[in-house]
Length: 112
Length: 110
Image 1 (spheres, each protein chain N blue to C red):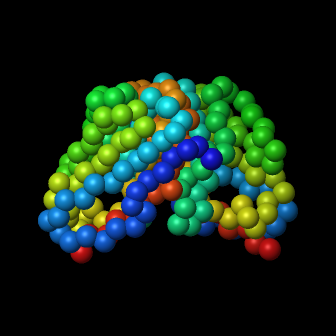
Image 2 (cartoon, each protein chain N blue to C red):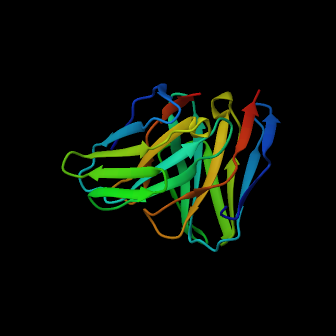
Image 3 (cartoon, chains in turn purple, cyan):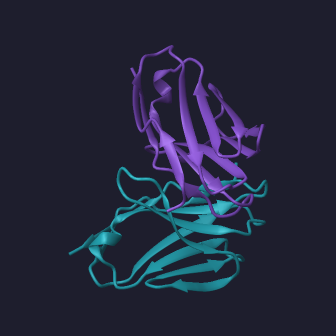
């Protein structure tokens, strides 16, 4: 398995609170991605990073921000969580853009 | 928005038979194609990549690509109960992002 970890694995939070999810990789891959997966929608890209401090928006970026201060870490922040952000969040990494992606174990987030 | 289409299933296949999963995509310039397997409650796992027209075989899995028809498929030979999962087709889009289909649920009948 690719060396990707996500923390926390499960989180329950209240509407309006800030939440940060962490993705950590040991593969030294340049590209890192955050997806959310919801029934009926499949995997949707939130944000991605193509290097330290280099990030860009994906398909469903509203309400989310990201940061990457080190190659190995990619953080996803929900500034003020809403119930519509209840989802399973996956981090993925790839060595090259448009190339094979490998997924972390996921974080199940519930916003009450 | 470029799309990747899959039949949601469930596709039920007897144990030992060939399971055939299909995917169509809309962006003619796509060059890279992937199949992922996802067990319930788990993360997607890459099982096949294919980049050129034709067939690519890996063990019991064969990926088939036809760029002219914008069609990619996955065949699973000698299907086992452990193959029961959701299979995601993924296609590289023209801006190098990967677009995922919503997946086909496969159920192997013992």
